[in-house]
Amino acid sequence: MKLVYAIVRKDNEDEVIEHLTMEHFSITKLATTGGFLRKGNTTLLIGTENDKVDQVIDIIKQECGERQKITVNMPYMSGTSMVNYTTMPMAVEVGGATIFVVDVERYEKI
Ligand code: 2BA
Image 1 (cartoon, rainbow, N blue to C red):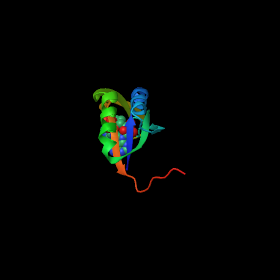
Image 2 (image 1 turned 90 degrees about the vertical axis):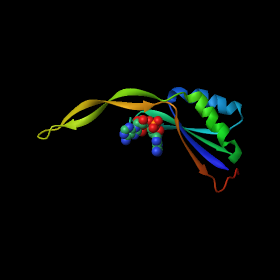
Image 3 (image 1 turned 180 degrees about the horizontal axis):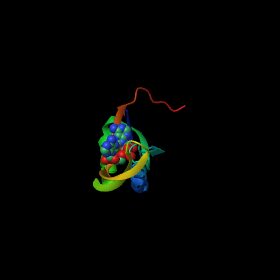
Image 4 (image 1 turned 45 degrees about the horizontal axis):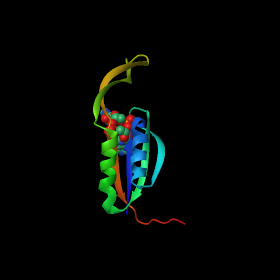
């Protein structure tokens, strides 16, 4: 058995959850925040048999779309004599999903 952690954009969560549910996968949805952009994203936990992991990843790929570059204004501190916060435009890739697959040592429903 495997546990799939999929970090997806909020924009895509409904489609991913709907598609996975239709294919009879069980999901737990967590509201999470990306450490870099400090924006809300969604982490899905999907426990499944080893031979179904590829199907889960295919569904996530279908529903999350391509990665694309966006420009964000990142705050940074400039100046030495006094604290002066300003912003700096930076290209960041968003879209798609970040997926971790881990082994499940034990699985029980009590
Ligand atoms: P965030 O941490 O908010 O990152 C958003 C996007 O910013 C990332 O997209 C990446 O393109 C860029 N980015 C992240 N850290 C960066 C850095 N130190 N320098 C420059 N650019 C950086 P994704 O890679 O698609 O990640 C989307 C979200 O997935 C992340 O949101 C984070 O919540 C999670 N994530 C990605 N990789 C992870 C990892 N190795 N471990 C844990 N969570 C991860």
